[in-house]
Image (cartoon, rainbow, N blue to C red; front, side):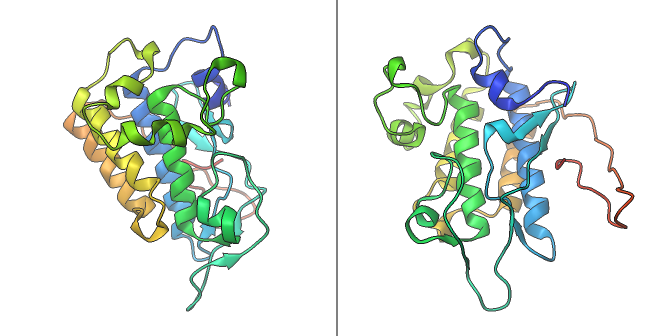
Length: 228
């Protein structure tokens, strides 16, 4: 992808910061991609949602990539898939780490971490030399997310204050829901998409161009425009 990964644009020094409007659009693209996977008959769980796996085209439309860790989700009366714990530190849901039980709500937690990175401009796990003493970004940001009066204190300073205060607070509230310790209380990705689109609409944020739905020659099914 021409613009490389979201990770590079958020964290690499010397790269022009992504504007707030674009960050919201990226979050929507990512949420739609994950929601598409969860809606498949196989109920696919992505399992490796992170900034480095989110790729950007010339217009900053986001695509999901690298499905090497993806798994079919639970079927029938099953509530989860039991599997070996693998993934990237800081992004994996706590119940998955503790038990190896994987559900679509595990992806919702990982999305919450990505959304937190978009808000703060901080890596999920910082280098010790940065003075970032907490174990993960979630540990550090948790108390700020739960207090709407304090959320602006952790917004990415490179945004220069050029964002909607109400929009930032709404995004923070959604992030907190996605990161809930109880997976049953996390929203579905369909509801996440709806919340983000409502946020974009309420702030008169222009929509991203509609992307093409690509057909693969090996399948009769069309490819979702937010997966790669």
